Image (cartoon, rainbow, N blue to C red):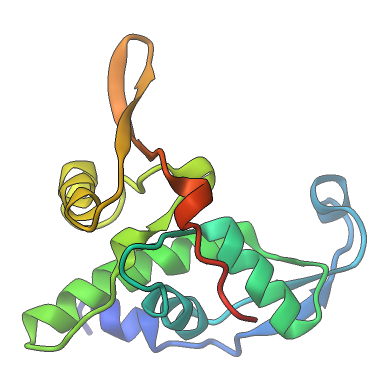
Amino acid sequence: MGKKSWSEKLNEDKGLPKVVKIEGKMTRRWGEGTVVIPSPREVYEIMKSVPKGRVTTVNEIRSALAKRHGATICCPITTGIFAWVSAHASEEEKARGGEGIPYWRTLKSGGVINDKYPGGIEAQRETLEMEGHRLAPKVSKGRTVGYVVLDLSETLHTPAP
């Protein structure tokens, strides 16, 4: 069997979502309580719901999913991975004549563009600017390493749980 497509990865739930107690080494990082490990489709559906002119962050998605499942937190690692899978699955969908989702509206914390999305940071910067967002270069060690959305506080979309 060949490599799975992004769409196949998106639709592979593997028993997710599931809520588990935070135990062992995880308590040092996340404290006590429960963590929800979301399904890829849940992340996709929330990313799909971000309206034009607005943006959200992976942390906003995590908060909504934690509330939805009655968990203390939502796993940051799987949520980030599933956002990445959703973006690539969206491009596959568009290549087949479908609509896809506005994945470029889902940012990393602090309003930073996700460099792992299809097209890279330049394509996302252009799309966000076309939608009316103001961006500034994110500079590290004297070079531009990405872009940050400047109007984050005014345009932040808080997804429904």
